[in-house]
Length: 490
Ligand SMILES: [Ca+2]
Image (cartoon, rainbow, N blue to C red):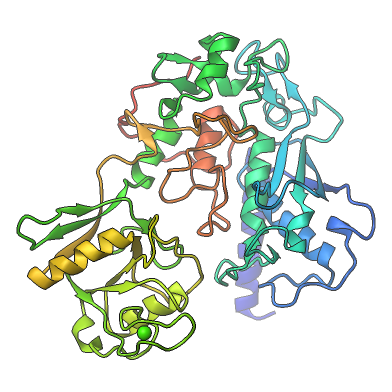
């Protein structure tokens, strides 16, 4: 053995000793595949080619490998001496024009008044209760999770199937939905991230109020859910924007993470608009705001109109190089939607040295939703309405227009300093109350719908688990002053 090898071995031995001696035990998350041979997680057909870093040879094997990765990510942060058993299967769930349910999950049971229970007469998700009791309180599985099999038959417009890739560095194809973040999301629901309240009646499932009701707070009513009557809970579930989380970890981390509504701050126009709001952020490129400082806005002229079907314009940025590309270095490019993918337009501007892109809709309606994947895109891009685009162009004719991609100071996903929960005025069964708010920016793992920017990060989910008192292997961040004045109920 060479000295280098000996050093390696002694390092490994030391690490093992440290792990064995430590009081903390990484949880074991055991998948229980409930699919019969030939379907879902047991589908023996050949694997999908080119799913990054997923080396399984069958389709079922690839699906299972993604769930296994999600289980490992959770196992690495949870501290439980009791193996967590997760029953998984793939079934046909709603899909199509009426809305698509990608997956659903929950705890198999709740438990209260178990050994070491921090709160009396309070119902905990069974995996959480097992971790606190340090024994298996229920011999059944702990979590059940179902994933939509129909997604792989192209049931949803523009989606050809799940993405079974495991490599965070490989872009998810635009027509695929990554299974890994969906699996992480569903496991969270089953482990502790759900209200467990019947939102039609406001009733708890058993005689004990759930742990969630100690943390969910209605600012308008000034009380936690545990202190509301069942009838009040039914109303409160629709109380947007007043439903918030009262746990300290979520609110402390949320202050550093959540961003305000994106706006373009404008300067240089006498009597013109000072701000353009209601922007749509591109789903590729850097995290918002991405552009520091100000830059001049330059309207793109790509020199080619009339090509393609429908015919393009000299303002669509589809042809490269641009006729006025030399003017774009260090500036923000203004161009129009249409004819070619958003990623191509932004890439062309980036190649000319632009530091940001504004894409104006060419038809009436909301700003364009700029989907697509481009790992090479390093500049931010925002979509504006047709009217906003026209106003910017008029301003450019009159004056030298400067802009900064900025954000307002108060994130829309907070209220009175507290992180908001999802409580739309029309109840969304299965979504309301048990998710962070959909307006959170950046998009969160536990938002009601999955976002393309998510892959393998647990973001605020982990802080919510810390608030709930889930034993975690990660040290808590240093305590700081928080804006949210609330405390959970003891
Ligand atoms: Ca063109």
